[in-house]
Amino acid sequence: MIFVVFCVMKKIKLYLSSSDVSTNILALKLHGFLMGELDKSYSKYLHENKTNPYASFVYREAESVVWEVSLLNEEAERKISPILIGLKSIRLENIENNINITKLELQQLTQEDLLEIFNVDSTDHYFTISFFTPVGFKSNGEYVIFPSIKLLFQSLMQKYNRMNGQDEVDLELLEYLCKNVKIVKYNLKTYYYQVHNVRIPAFIGKISIKINGATTLKSFIKMLLVFGEYSGVGIKTSLGMGGYKLENRKK
Amino acid sequence: MIFVVFCVMKKIKLYLSSSDVSTNILALKLHGFLMGELDKSYSKYLHENKTNPYASFVYREAESVVWEVSLLNEEAERKISPILIGLKSIRLENIENNINITKLELQQLTQEDLLEIFNVDSTDHYFTISFFTPVGFKSNGEYVIFPSIKLLFQSLMQKYNRMNGQDEVDLELLEYLCKNVKIVKYNLKTYYYQVHNVRIPAFIGKISIKINGATTLKSFIKMLLVFGEYSGVGIKTSLGMGGYKLENRKK
Image (cartoon, rainbow over all chains, first blue to last red; front, side):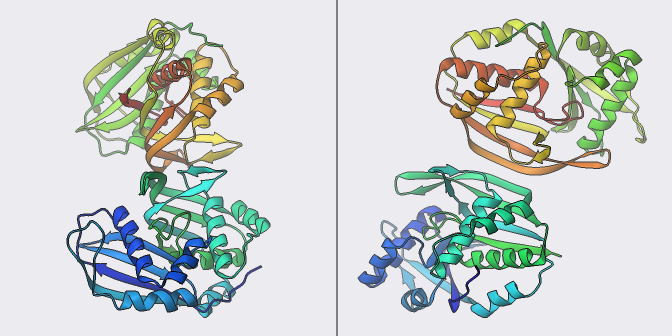
């Protein structure tokens, strides 16, 4: 049911020289730039993949623009991280000035980290999830502009499983989870995310969730949420959507 | 299906001298004050009523605190409006200083106004609803913290019908409405509304809705929404919850 077979996930944070261009547009352009830098066969493989083994988020942090790229498996790490780490400046289509990289940060999450979260009985029953880029979900062919526990965790379970070579989500587990987890607080607004000529309905902001029930459920959720800080959640996570971080965990 | 038999609805806005007390607490205390001023038999009748023929909202507007009371039928108007119009100052339980009334405004909505909205083919297909007090819904015995078209209009139809002596909501009409109306934009956050010892999960903020389909549906919705500016929406509208106003209608 729970598989943890990948080795190390990496998060590379590139601090860019400030730009007037919206983070939405930058995310698309930086994705295009990255694809252009990859060898053709790998970018073709990524293009055909259902779930990308990487995520790419662009957001403002104080005076900087941050480009955060998560590499979710060993191959992505091997192919993409040398490109990003070697970058000094970026030239983007239709943007006049070069963008300089002013700082680079590396973070990683190992198989052991996730296993430890899962294996230690957790008492954390309250999480605040801060979506720092717009989040989109599709359900029954329609975009959904309000979050729900089901959509949120279905997506995280799916991404988690696919990183482990599994395509199916355990629906019984998802149902059990939905019965025991609730959104208890939020501060959200809609955000129409531009992807080429489509404006994708999405939302941005914060939610807090509360978990009832077994400590194993709490551990499982915590593991998924920590994984999701790398993978993102929902649709178009390689084009900048679905980035979040966990805030002050309350006991 | 559509009944418009009441005569005039009144809205009385009392501007109060500023207060440090939260609008939530003030709403409860002002409701208690009002009940105390009514003749016993009428306050008993109101207490036993399923849907109150009045609504009471408290909110801040610039420097003032506003107490807005809607009187939804002739009897409520006859019993309550003389009390409110005659008020010079209010003494509330456990609040040291008297609250002075600095200004009073009267608004009304007649049967003809609503009928005219309903009978004129409307082209308005976009409404922004600004909830200025927290809104709560109960569905299947549980509080719901996200709005939905169904909960919103079920409540408005129910309040509208009850003001006209009808208890049932036309579920087919509601279903048709839900199929053709969508929330397309929002900016909302949760708000736990204190009622005695209970914290009722609720939300506050704005939503925008878009209507597809027949002009008669648009007219019906517009009529309900204009009515709802008086009745409020959702639960506990006599205790300060569910107040909203419509914003800039786009054609």
